[in-house]
Length: 397
Image 1 (cartoon, one colour):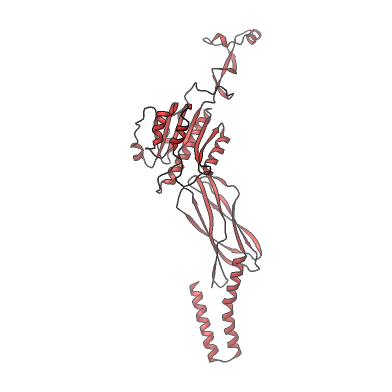
Image 2 (spheres, rainbow, N blue to C red):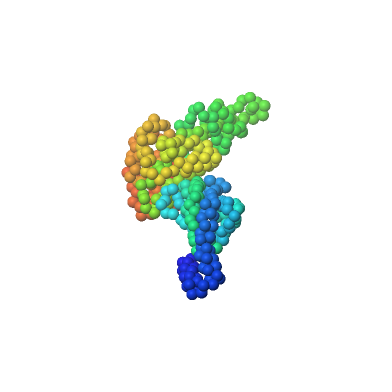
């Protein structure tokens, strides 16, 4: 582009010299033409710049991490002039990370037309992805001038986390919700309010479980298996405060959310209903979401992701624990990235739960090995960043 401008300046100077030396009409016409070309191109470029509108959009604003998704850039050119070369500078970043990713798209722009340019983006980490067209540069046919357009909007996409298979065990608890009517579909229990199954008598079965009316018809003893309540008060609490401002901030946050999803999925697979608690930055308060199936879990995580903010104005977790110290729980799982979190002490002393787990996400195996469990009733589980399955292997909930 610079070489072309230099060439044009030399050409104009040559035409001026030619006109001075030769007083022909052709020399004057040539000089006017050479001077008029860049002026006309500049005016046309300004018209095109004012006539182009750029808008970004996505087909689905909820995507999965590590999966490419299409972003549509709509370019509307209302002028009668086409653009042979245009450059769209795209920038995207996660809300929890200052690192920006950039790339450039090259395309022509048709005259008096509207066109869609589709490009694909993927994210290695969950969170909110901000996508914007920083600018679009258009060039005249001779590449003498470059015009910059900064009218594009920005869009966001919620990148959902992945769940990981974990080992562990679900401990039976007698702290069932007495008013609940949710029972296991796979395991019998001791709740006489509902019959789980009818079967033949086995030695050792209690006599009060014999279905006498049906036994008289079958000429054999039929025993009632009672139902197992699965509406057990359990809470998963994730502390979204990330005090680390290094390059590990986003991977640590990603591991925390995926640990939450993994434990929640494990509990659902074992028919253990539970509540997810997190701080919502939009409302400025703690949110409780009941998780009863995969759909309610997905909705809760989606709301959690959309509520994210990089600010450190998150209310300390111990505030919520102090306000709800009357809870009687079967299990309480607390997820954090701070091994010295004051909330752990409050959990140890104030949370009334049969089982109390604290999952601490650490950057490396060295940091994880340095985590000491100094609490009497809390099971501290260090989780190495990005290694959930191998770290959470003996959890009890």
